[in-house]
Image (cartoon, rainbow, N blue to C red; front, side, top):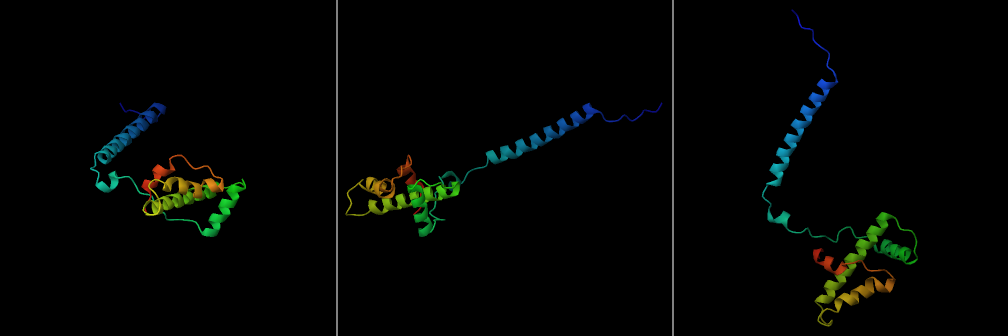
Amino acid sequence: MKRKHRAPDEADHRREMEEIRRRSTAENKERLSAAWHRPQDNARSKKAKRTKKRMISQTKYKELIKKRQHHKKLSLTERKQLDRTLFVKYCSCVKSLKYDKKVKDYLEYPVCMSSIYKKRGFKPPKGVTKRCGSLKK
């Protein structure tokens, strides 16, 4: 007696798809566990330092300052550029005054905060002083 080859139905298709999913997740688990147990070198375990690169030009900087002072609409990229530049300028100011013999200890923070943010009418971001440690010179 000959057996007829039956057409694949939905149950066969479901079983086949489950098998593919099971195989792919097992392979992913192996790959992830190998990556998870990889020994970390010192360069990866340390905090990443931020750099000063991609500073905007002086004219662009002044233009963005005027826009923000006069409450004009800034695009997201302009806002990010200005925030980043103000942050870098604040940190540079702090670092330059910190090692200046003429300035008393710990006066660099309010002086720089005033000159970079307050006198321009900007609200300084929270924790800006703590984040200066992650900036390369």
